[in-house]
Image (cartoon, rainbow, N blue to C red; front, side, top):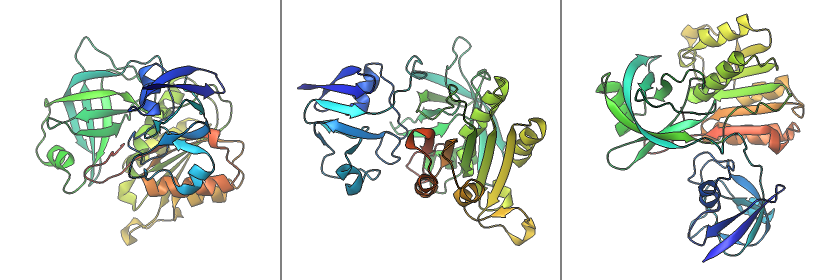
Length: 342
């Protein structure tokens, strides 16, 4: 049985089968709705359910709670329709014309950036290019059917290769293999580009970019894209990490700020080591943003990092008057079996 889903405010309509999630149906029919993990963990696809009913099965996804449901919100990557629906969610016009491909790639570079982050560069076949938006991610398809998701760290104009930042997860089959066994010229299969985390170029508001750990990867792509396209909006980068060594491309970030008057950079360490002799900002990265900008209503905010950072920042930024439609985020996990994102 199929149902009709109407998107507001656009009025677009699509059909959704009763065993198909709202997000899957929308993407299948060319309507690009926000999403990130597609497994109910990140909350990127959260929107309003104006009319109709949905079901999540026996176990409620972690990114939606009873309060959200009482307020009429729905998690579209997991929501199965029980009737015709009317939903309110922003559509992503810039992403819907991009083709998602499954392609072979060859590893052309493995470069340790610090003690637990590897830069991997992969090259597509000579006859292929992957069109993507700065900040999106790809899935690496493993032979046993599992996937590992990593954000693209390069800008779209640098499409002669794809750059990924992989954090070593002890006990993780894939990252253990990358750090201990993988050699250059290894062959992999990827699918992408995926995700709705990318720079909105139709806004004139100043931009705050918040990275946690290897959440720096998609932020790097966004900044390099903005520089290449002459975007002169003020861009304020906050990068949170534990210790100095975890700011694995600190010189690059400082270089952006030195070379471009509209870019500023604030590194924040939560657990600096004595040998760091750290005199910069300390604590949680979202607290540094709030301290500097108690009123966020005039900003667009992009953040990428682990779920606890995203959840804490969403709450804190909401208290600073940041509208939901001006917040974009990519939430990922560092567990052995979850989306890493960076």
